Each structure stands twice: as structure tokens, then as C-alpha cells.
Length: 196
Image (cartoon, rainbow, N blue to C red):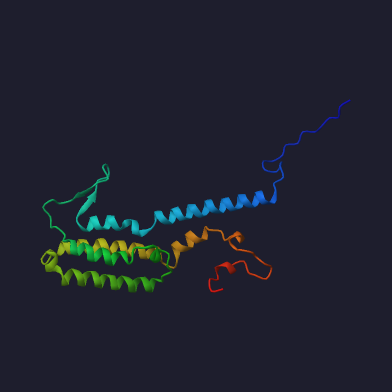
């Protein structure tokens, strides 16, 4: 007479024993996927991506939502000279980058930076107003200044107390697989010591 067997349901992933190397490979693959996701997010929020948009906005263009083309807002408006655009884009790109957003600025530091930015923008627009063809066009000078100040302030605000860097790097998991050959005497973060 055949023996009766009791049917036992095994939870998923527990029925087949995994080999140690197989589990380590899966963890490594999960870490790589996570790092790729973080790199993708960092690239998407990179302030340098806004430089083209700022350039067009300074020149007096807006983006058509349907066609995605840049259209001049006022065809009869003042033509912004290339030298103004070049100077401001050079200046603005020094602040609109990952180094800025991933920094750890205090409120005081951001206020000091913004004070310097405001002084530079107003000095440049005043000093070169005749060269730019904007000597008596205060509204246009204000418009250009506000575009730049708003963008720079927003980027600096992202770095307030390291908010953005904490969000991004907090989601990364430091793994012991990054160490070359961990030993009992070495610390878990020894691989970060570049001076060794």
C-alpha cells in the first residue's frame, strides 16, 4: 500500500536552495540597476539641461507646447545682442551645474552668493546698457535680470543644507562588493580613502 504524502505549499523563493555565488550575483545586479537609476535621475535633474532654455528666454523666445519649437514673443521687440547672451550664459553656467546642486550651502552662504549675483547682473546691464541697445529700456533689462536671478536662486535653493545630495546619495546603498578584498582589520568604508 503506497504511503500518503502531505502536500505542503512552499513560499516563493524558498523551495530551491540557492548557491552562494548565485545570491551574490543577484545582489550585485540589483546594486547595478539601482546605480543606473540614480545616474539617470541625476542626469534628468542636471541644471545644465536648462541652459538652452535660459538662452532662448533671454533672447525673448517662448516654447510652443504643441510644436516644441522656440517662437519669438514680439517680432518687433528689441533684438538682444549676441555679446549679452554670451556674457550671461558664461556667467550663469558657472552656477548651473551638478557641483552647485549637490553642494551643502547654508542660508547665509546662499544669501551671499545671491547678493554677488544680483550685483553682477545689475552692474553688467547698467554698464553695458548702451552696447546692448538697452540704455533707456529698463523693462527689458529687468526682464533679463529676473530670468537669470530666478533660475540661479532656484538652483542654489536645491543645495540648501545638502538637501538634494542627501536625497540622491541616501538612496544609494554602500555595498561591501565595492571593496577589493575586505579583511577583518579593514573598515567597511576603507575603499573611500583615496590617499591610501
